[in-house]
Image (cartoon, rainbow, N blue to C red; front, side):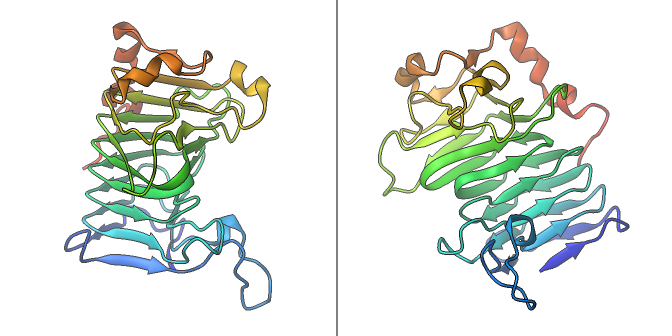
Length: 254
């Protein structure tokens, strides 16, 4: 495992290319540690980023435990203002944990997984990224705190799936906590995305508090009329509130 401790701020990792430089480990939630106890979800990450102002470019973060271990994180980020550019995140369930009370930025990244493979309470802006589904599941499981203005914002991203993944198998997200917020702006969505789009995690009351929205989605557009009634289609004016500048504030990564 690689651990960037809380007292180590302004750490940068620069690879020789995402296909060349790979940080990988094979822990999983059900794997036993040296004391015979399960690592659990939050003990399963290959890389931990606890320090603030971390950035990474041109490398891969991977959890290689496969599908048998259940939840297995490639990266766990609890440090504030973490930025990633031209990076890959490879895993299955719970690939990337976006910790609370943080803001994060992703540029031209590739994130792959199965179930809830982007999850947590952070404010995170994804620009020009690819979200790749390996099997049926959910792209996001946000746990945005009540009163936090932004959760996850995906701008000009591409949603792809394995060739073996049949049509209508993947949800855009489900709320890990009641006030989850996820917005897709000008994103290209493949046929693997389910027409209803969103799931309430089996709790009807989540439909009253979660904020799930799209703006000018492309690709499988014929299905957008079948989205769940509690999801939103943003107007031009509403979408203008989700620019990178407004989401990230004065922070300028890279």
